[in-house]
Length: 323
Image (cartoon, rainbow, N blue to C red; front, top):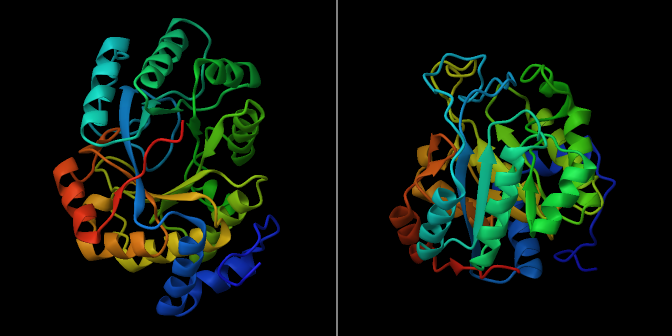
């Protein structure tokens, strides 16, 4: 393989990843850009819309999350949406240009029964529209993953959030290995894996790249790697942390692109606080997927008109769904 089209590796170490992340910014971006152009269609970006189908009341204690029942954020527990309402939202997302529709439920884990049956029907309906279907429902077992696959699910999102050492200070109600077990169940069912994390939660650069190392050691790599910047929500334990800078996000996007060359790297939560130039540099450095729509579950996101203008200025167009 050439330097710009390296073989996929699954044996990355944290010191290697840290050396990539910490190199001079322009060298890092140039390297990531070369790999991106060798591996991915020029000028194409995947547009994904994310809808919360069951909001609030989650028993997990994730320190960043306004939907946790452990935090006083003013977010109330809401009943699960009806299938028709979700499919209406999916149709509007498609009309606005999205090619993947993601549905999230604030659950610790999937439980068999009417609520899960409803999610299965949502997946079938989204697929019938010609959209890629993705869900994020917490932990799930092999049988549940197989049922989602049978319904036509394309992708399952389950983030690692941060590196293994930092994880303990962010979440106590489930373990890092619980998360990895869910990813194995997803992969075994033949569903593509969407897994990334959040920066800006008080972690070190070593913690950040440790998360990327965990993901890059998976065989195969996750098909999609979301890179989120913490959205500081009042009432959560992390609300007073300083904001993530654009350069920090660019470094993570570029490092992810270098370590997982064939994966989509998704610019995710936290974009609403970033200047346009930082978002464009992330796209230049290897991000080729964004969440598209004015809300991500319960946190703000740039509106579709803003994003359409951003992509037009960059000369980027929506990638068609891979069905």
